[in-house]
Image 1: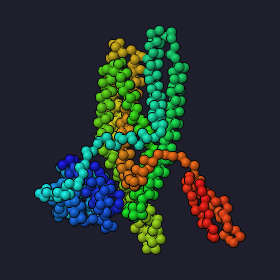
Image 2: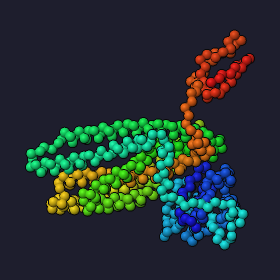
Image 3: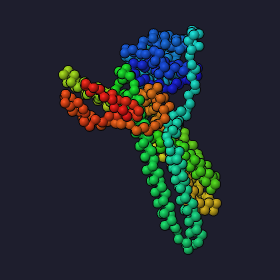
Image 4: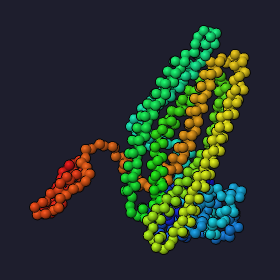
Length: 521
């Protein structure tokens, strides 16, 4: 067995939860069976799939399995991993068991760690377990592909933004501007030492201090304007291309998916695109600024630098814990928002039926349940964000306390001058700020990876691959805004103010009885 916990696979069609569970179960056995491939080989019907059908599919993947019936109190003895019939018409994968809790990989809402008692209330008593006594079919075993090990840094990929023209010039410009932050500590250290060494005969250079601040701020503002232009262009082009690929899907694609689910995935994917450029450029350069700040701190006082390193390490451990919680809440909010959007769209489309059948009160009650579920999840997320922020703040406060405990004796003994003390404080703020930005960027990249992964199914692979292979070409084309034609009469056989779109070098036939004409671009 390669993995205990597989990569979460989300269902896209309303009736393919069984295929999603098979994809995850196959990964636990070291077999690569992507959902897209399973959907093509074993398309799900409008009524879903039975356990017998799932058993047959697993057999063709060289994974022997058999269905079982069990009592609710026997759930704790069920061999894992197993595909569990959940609720009235849903399948989930039970990945592992720990004490009185079980890890549930739900294709609809994501990974959950549920108490056994809570899970017993939702199950039907049927499951699909692995058959370790039966040897897999030799022909099926020869045809399967072995899965590659999952990379924990997959969510940190920056390939999408690396293809943008001019992105590295923008990154270099932002990096050079960020280096101006080190001008202030140098000026403060030199000025304070000069003032105190001259016994008050030298004034503090307030003007130059203010001038450096104004120049640094102005440069940062200019970089922000350029960055926003890049972001706007990237989001617009990406959104238009994504919408075009969405419309390239077949009618069957939309028939098998809920409108609210499609809308939620696409809208979240579009809004997430606006964060990618800044996050990726920050991850490319922020660590360099942090390393420079750490080097300066170690040069000034290795002992004080050690305190900051310990504080950053603790923040990193908190971030590792927060990654999984952020991923959970991102999945939950997207799913619950999609359910509510789908319910609203369904209500609007069937409003006449609801009114004529007197179902308004039932719809109101159902909407209240959706709204309660959504905002309960948002409330829990806000509480979690407050807890996470408080932990970060506590670590920062403890670091400051230990910094003062160690810095004041050094200052008193003369090992650290007053100018160096102030300069170190500035550099420490730079170091802490940039390392914190890196941690939060990693958390945001993880959330964006979840959003991108959910939206990936909206875009056909062949259209996406073709758009990646085809270079951008700016061709002059004719385009139409309106078509205003005069009534066709024996004495009037022409159109007035006819504007149309036509690719360069292509002919567009215009039918006009009795003699057709042809327009050439």
